Image (cartoon, rainbow, N blue to C red; front, side, top):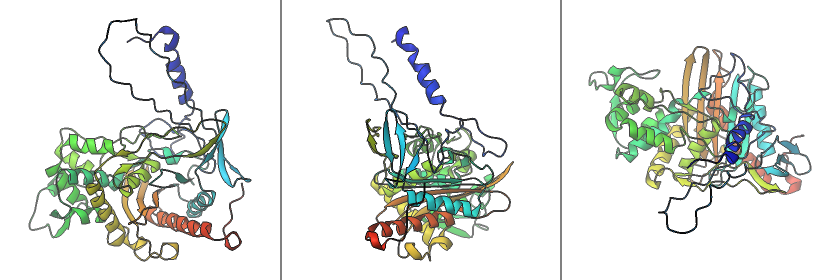
Length: 441
């Protein structure tokens, strides 16, 4: 059906308004991004754009005799725009203009300030930590720091880093859905840094290490995932799993979030295996990383992230309904695998003997690491949640180092989780016994 000329101009105008939120990428120091430039916004005062998901059209019905049908309705009015945030000292909360009204944001000032200080103390070239509540989607912190680009904003929503082995969460889900049991064992050799086609063939003389699918996720065993993917997945299956885990589509949020692209090769079995193991052309934003952990923490359900706690003088942006991504059985198996990351796998040294606020709190997670040579950047990830048995908080930390690395993501993520549980204890104490104070605006 053609759109009348009287309303067709509204579509490009709306597109221009949304495009105006973006800023050009910086210089050669800027992290590479396969997507358009991220919208501006500081973590201490995040500017946001209210998400306006249009309702899906109803299925057409057969025409029936009667009066002529009215013309197409005008496009819905755009949702109110969320402006730059500031810390309101009276409320002790972040607030932001929302259209003609005001929004109180979900960000926790204590957590936000602590996480920003941590990243600044390590003086990381680029670093981001996102904290959110899996069950509600409430975003608690969007902390960013860039020593390489002082003042760089919007890293939380930018898919500027390779997903690396974090993508193994998607591959593991696809394998489980294809009937591969968690105990399926594969023997292998090599593949710590990169894969070669010959590593996908069994070699009884050299395949001295053997791991189950479950242990392979915790140890991030590249060859195990590559072999299992080559033998048990086809491109459509892996691509479908990636799409359900929010890759290749826009994430509904009050800020513009980069699409996390996941290209799954169609006609090259080795490249399919390479992508499944975390070496493919897949990129990920930190907010998306926290949502991957949240899906597992929620038993396989995606709860859309929320930044607006309440609105004054205007209706709060509506959030989409939660969506099931994988069934409970697959999610439970993924949860066991992610827990092994912190008990015996790649993050065991950071979390196994964690004390302080994390003493006795089990953590589930997935690490990722990948180096890009030109320009040289060392990316490390940790996405996870805690407590592992009764999740309260999900975390995603991305650290990008140069040749001289300062700190890696699991250490910063552990600090963020310690801050969350310390903050929770402090909030439960009577007013006179609290030692933590809200940061000055």
